[in-house]
Structures are given as structure tokens and as C-alpha cells.
Length: 243
Image (tube, rainbow, N blue to C red):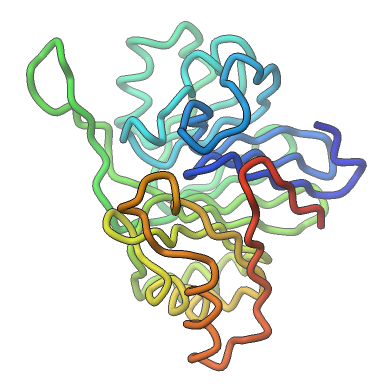
């Protein structure tokens, strides 16, 4: 996708998001293109300059390794995740191990890793036990034009989102709202308040019946907090925001 010099954010269902920056860089967040809601097959993804995976659950690591093997992106990730990836990924030199509070500059962008309140491992069939892939994280990406995108990853609301807002001042927040495994609409509305953002892209809902939160419920919860002027981008999978 060509952003035409703007910022283009496309949601492909679940937590799978593609960002095309004003400078033409393609960023993939949690690229599970094989999720049941996605209109795009993972095999069709032919460009990724920057790969960002928030944590090691299979529905977020998704199709990251085969996509990265084709496209060879820069891949900043939680330190322990890079240790494991180095043993299974064909381009370990492209990995950038980091941790919360760290910032790396790559592809003309600034990527800061933030906290998230969730779990992060996966099951290792060969070992017959869980595989530890480090703690969950979120990312703030500063684009070429100075605007900032906050991708929260899987998380509940937590008080230090106020610090994320104060330190990094994101322009738009990409937040889970489905509930059960992450925060739902009530908690997400508080997250919006803490972050101080005026635009939200809700994700991680509707993929399965158990992820029952909806953008309409988020709008109601925002109104209850006197935040009815916050823009909620209620996309269908495959639709794009251009800013």
C-alpha cells in the first residue's frame, strides 16, 4: 500500500494492524493475517520494513516469522523473544533486542517499548512445557512527520498509561476492547482518559464470540466520562484510516 505521503492504518481483524508511514515505510503489528476475520491471506504480504510483535501468544506472533523471512524487516522485540527468535529465524542479525522504556531508531522511525498488563508465553510441543518469551509490551512509534502511534498490545488498563501519555503524547491509540483476555470497553474508556488521546482504533474484538466488546459500547463508556468528542475509528477488517 502507498500512503500517498499521509499516514495509513489498516486493521486486518483481531490485533493485526498495518501502518504505512508518510515516508512510505510499512510497519506490521501482531501480524496474524490468518485470523478468522482477516480479508487478506498471509501469503500475499510482500512488504514489511518494521515488524513489531507485542508478545508471544500465537494469535499475535501469528504469521510474523514467514512474513519476516520473505521481507527482511528490522525487528525490535522483547529481549527474551529475540533470544528464542535467534534460534528459529533465518535472519537473526535483523533482530533488535530491547526492553520497556527503551527507544530504538530504525527505518527513519523511533520505536519505544512500553509496559502492558497481560501474559506472554506459548506452548512448546517439543519440550512439553510452556515457552517463556519475555513479558508483554506495547509500542509507541514516532513517524517521520513527528506524529506518534500507540499500539497497546494485549493489556488491561493500568495507571501508568498516564505516564505513557505524558512522556510520549500519542496522537492515536490502538487499544483492545474485546474483554475476557484483555480490557473491555469500560476499561478502554479509562485508558483513553489516562492517555489523553483524541482518536482511538479499537482492536481485539469480534474475532471469536468470547471477545464481545464493541465500538458502540466504547462510545457509550467514553460519553459517560464526558469524552464523547473522542473519535472512535470503528473499522471493518481490511478498512483503512488515512490521517
